[in-house]
Image 1: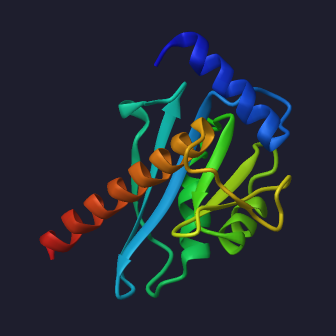
Image 2 (image 1 turned 45 degrees about the vertical axis):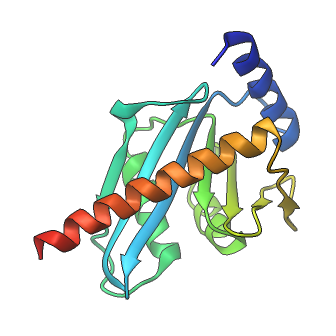
Length: 164
């Protein structure tokens, strides 16, 4: 992406989500399972609109035997940041509940969630949800990031199932 456009988008994100800093680095988390079996998670990082391949993370959920998306998200977020490598913003694939689960453990990084199908954003600035404009640069960025994390989680889930 063109540098000027990327800088402008970082400023737009800052204004849209009312954050202290521009949003250049975003991590997105997703959880995948098959009928509550083989629960896995993923984290992908975009830096100035580009995926950072060396920051992709996949997680086998250790603490759960049954599906609990909130607890699974909490586990992978805590494991991802055990070395304090925080982004400018965290994006969670999910709705209000997923957002609450992560807000309870991460205090100094803005967190948003993006609910599938309706494409509704939840954040501190938008606690009741905000319908994302699918044709805006912010909408395109967040949806592509969420979809990439989702694809990465499903890919890992399929790999784990093949091993069984």
